[in-house]
Image 1 (tube, one colour):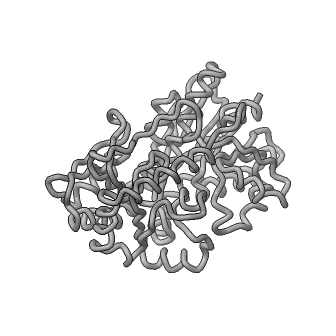
Image 2: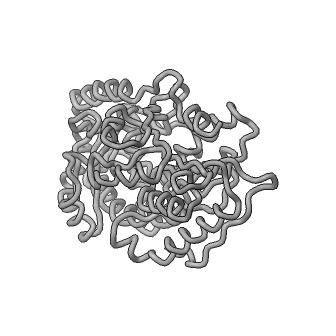
Image 3: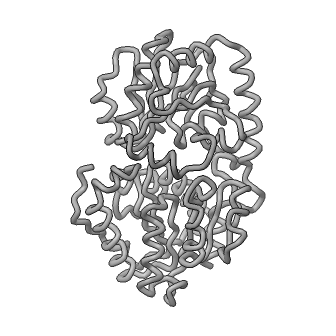
Length: 382
C-alpha cells in the first residue's frame, strides 16, 4: 500500500454534515452505497459524508477519502501499514471533533471501526462517552466465528447495531446493545446481481477486492483454469488498484479482465472465487463452482487457532453445507481446481444441486418488510 502516513480529510460541504459513513473495503463501500441511495429517496435533505470508495461517491455521499484503496487483510499486512492506520484514526477523530456529525455509521471493517468507536467514547464525543454523536454499526463482525468477546466492547461503545443475517441478533442477547435484523441487501426487492448463471457462458475467476489477497489467490485461479482450459475466463475486479495486481500476474489470452459494474450482468457457466462478497453473489445466482483461499502463512496459522467455523464462505455457513467446496492454502492445486471446473461444466447433478441450494439461500436473505437499513438509520437519527 502506497498511502502516506500524513492523512488529511477535507471539510464537509457548507451547512455541515448529518451522517458520516466509514466503510473501508470495496464490499462495505457497495453495501453502504445501497443504503445511501435509499436514504436519498427517503430523506433528500440529509447531508452525508463518507470515508469509503467510489460506490459511495456515486450514490451521493461527499467522499472525504477513498479508504477502499488502502484496504488490507491479515495480521502481517496490517502491521506493515500500522503508521497509516494510526494516522487515519487520529485524523478521523480530529475531523469528527471539529465538524460534529449528528451520527456516524460504521460499516463492517471492524479492525478500524471498533477502535474508532472506542476512541469516540473515550474522548467524550459519542453518546456513550457523554457527547452528542450517535454511533451506529452496520454489518456485524463475525463474532460467531471468532473474537466473540468483542460484543461486550461493542455494547459499551455503540448505540445500535444492524445485522444482515437473522441468527446474528441472538449472538448479542447477553449484552445491552440494541440489535436489529435488517436483512441482506442481496435479498431486497430490486436487487440486481453483477453475475448470472449461463451454462454456455465463460468461467468466472474472482480473486477478491484486496490487493494482498488478490496477489496470493489469482495465480491459483489462473492455474486451475489452465488445468481445464475448455472455455475463456472473465475476471471481475472492483478498481484500478486491483487491476494493476491482476495485470502483474500476466493473464494469458482467453482470460479477460472486466471491471465490476462496468456493464450488464455477466453470465457464467462456473466460478472459482475467493471467499468474499462476490462468492455470495455467485451462490445466489446458482453458478456452480468452488472457493479458493490463500493467506500469508502466519495469518493462516493464527486463523486456524482462532477461527472456529467449519467454512470460510458465507453461503456455506448460512446453508451449513458447502454449496461451494473450499480449497484452502496448499489444497488449492491446479489439478483439484481444474477437476472442479470439469464437474461444474459437465455434471448435470452438480448444476442442479447448486440451483437448489441457491433457492434456499435467497429465502434466508430475504429483507423483512419495513426492515431496510435506511429505515433503521433514519429511525436512529430523527
